[in-house]
Image (cartoon, rainbow, N blue to C red; front, side):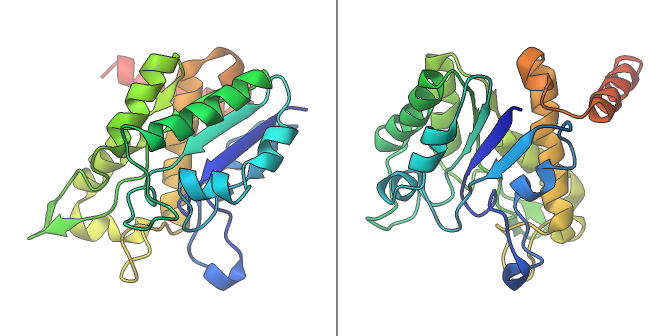
Length: 228
């Protein structure tokens, strides 16, 4: 049985009753996965690549990964924080940490995939303000290119979605009015679908993690797009 490991921050993390309705993307992934795929949601609230590594949270993932498993890597929200325990530089330490994750996955003969961070919901005068993560999404894309690893650009996709929905209609996706970073169930499901659509587009071994009904759904959407 293959395992999908999903590491990252609070936008990924599996939440319990005490933080509901906050919902991580990994919580919604099970809606899309094939029977027999084990989901290991290893996101941690408030963690960056640095703290995730320094505090040993990646060690059990590294030990458990096996050939054919899938590792989804999504960080950036907390790497940008002005906190010595979490901050990384996008061009040096952040990129180096991503490469460590990738190297470990490859050593285990697992399939690593990089994911750029979810866009923050920011509006000014009802106009969406992109670029909430500075240079970090670009760093993820660059590492993916240089390492020959797939990158799912969730930053670009969520920015486009939030801008399209607008100020009011985007609120139900996020923990508004508490914050504009963390997701409610509707947002987690929408963004899990984006991630799974990315796996579908990659094809081959990546697509094998998806439920056949999900694959059929994506294929039907492809046909509709081709005829528009």
